[in-house]
Amino acid sequence: MAENMEGTSGAPLFFPSPDTAQPVPDVADLQPSAINLDPVALQAMNREELGKEILEMLACLRRRPLQEVTEGAPYTDGTLALDSMTAVWVISTVGKAFKRRLVRLSEVDNESLRSVGGVAQLIQQAIVPIDVAGAA
Image (cartoon, rainbow, N blue to C red; front, top):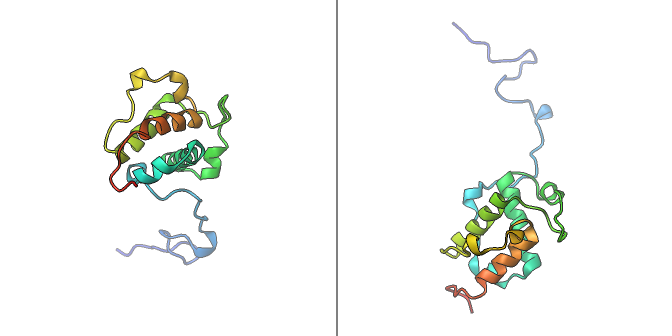
């Protein structure tokens, strides 16, 4: 029995023809588990730079373009609003770069977990005193 592997246009059914192929979206190719953060670089960042790094992490986590992520609802501090589970994921992911837990969540003000700015400030306070191999 022979199978017909061509569509009515003569092109294979399994692969779109070049003229109908969908454009590749501007989405991070990384899986969230593949995020690789440099602890020395993180310690050198100010709050705003940490915020941008967090936004890039969120774009990877959500598999959305960075611009789309940044257009989300703002919190009262003017930065992107976060739910607590996402904030915990960000803190945990940054903690993995330092090979330790950065904060005790039970001791953190819940307000700090509600925005990118709050999480960036929390991370910045937590990583300043950490000695990192290779840091000057």
